[in-house]
Amino acid sequence: MRMKGFFSRISPRRAVSDFKDEWKKPTPHRWQILGVAMAATFAVFMLFIPESQKGDPPRPEVMYISTFDGNRTEAEIIASNCANQELKDALQARIEANEERKREIYRALGRATFIDVDSMEEEIEAGRATEVETGPTPEEIAVSIDQYCARATGQGDGAGQDSAAG
Image (cartoon, rainbow, N blue to C red; front, side, top):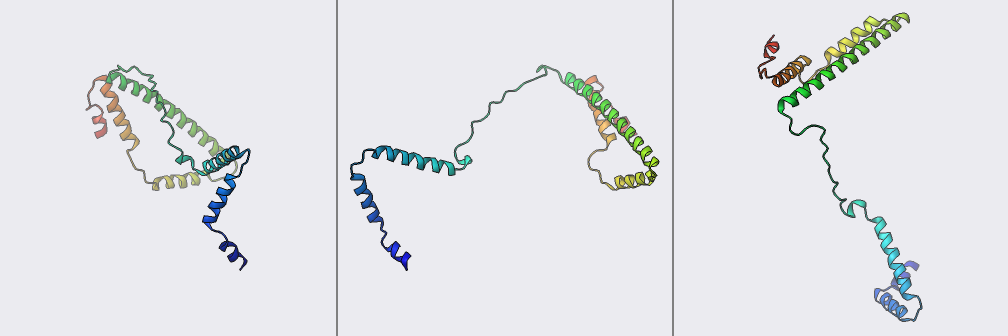
């Protein structure tokens, strides 16, 4: 009941007339107080506006850096790619040799600690056999790389198809 009486005494018309009466009173710092009040209100509103609503960020400047000659021929590009592929293949062969060496060390450790290493390897191979691989096989990839590199030497697109048929 008390709240109902409180809200019945509030009226927007009276609030506006009270504001006018207070504004008309001579106060020495009226404009400074108004400025601080407006600045504080603006600051509070800016805190609640999300970052995405403040405006789009400026577009970044893109600078292209080329480490290759722009006038290279297709044969030079293919030759460079093939040289990089040979380097990649050599590194992959070294990695695989290191992995095999690690497996041998682990086999020796397993046998020294009386673990049945052979049955564990059979289980791993059985698991690998059940995995379904999608995409080209390593042999198909090697043939396609050979065909690609043959274009640089001018042997044509048919090079390497004999090895694919065999």
